Length: 300
Image 1 (cartoon, rainbow, N blue to C red):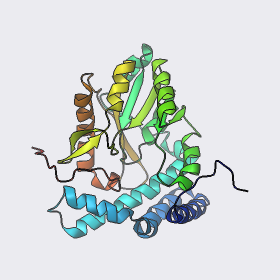
Image 2: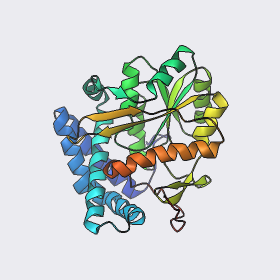
Image 3: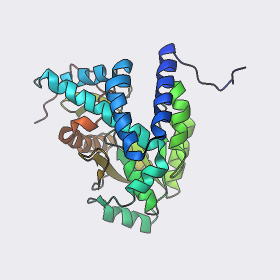
Image 4: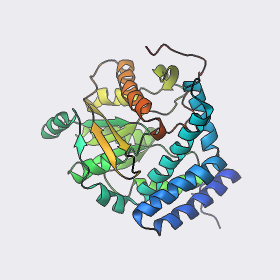
């Protein structure tokens, strides 16, 4: 008899989950660097096309870069899936991954602000997007003695989410599931002087229109509102995958100035935008980020 808590979804969700589980288990039996190459290639050439990831990425790339040659759209879309596969297996290999990252330096103007916040027990909210591997900074800061919680947005595929969520909770600080109860716990964690991270670059239908890569994107203001409510220091961080496909360049940027929520979110978005423009292969173009694609804005 099936458990009442067993996930339910579409037949396509079930098939993709079975494929991913099989691929992940195969990869985990390989040496670390080999498993990264294997997962990258599998997502780029097999699962990515099957799941429609590459097609969606190309659609978004055409919107943002209409003058880019079609073959470049395809190249970036394939690289996006490669990065997704590598990121996925890195997060499933969190013990080995953490060990690999132990000598990776963190740089940036936010380091002094972070030290000051820790000294004064001020809450810290790290903000980032689906770029490179967004878990890398949390790994590194955890290794340096920080306890960093997270607000986890469940994946749309319920079968895959059921086991992926376990990897999110296996290390680091507390992880809260997005929703009324989880968000309340997340805020309480910050109010107690804690540190936490939040990804802000997914579409939110009830959000505000904020320019992102030349088009308006529906953006939630929750990151700014939570920071203002808890008086948290807001620090953007990013981990850019290096050309070898294994190492990372990690930056903790200068704090986001407290102000009205829209201005704060615009600043966060601009920080992410600069990284995406510099490293388009590493942002998750698969997201349906632009709901009002006809509303183009002047980016100059």
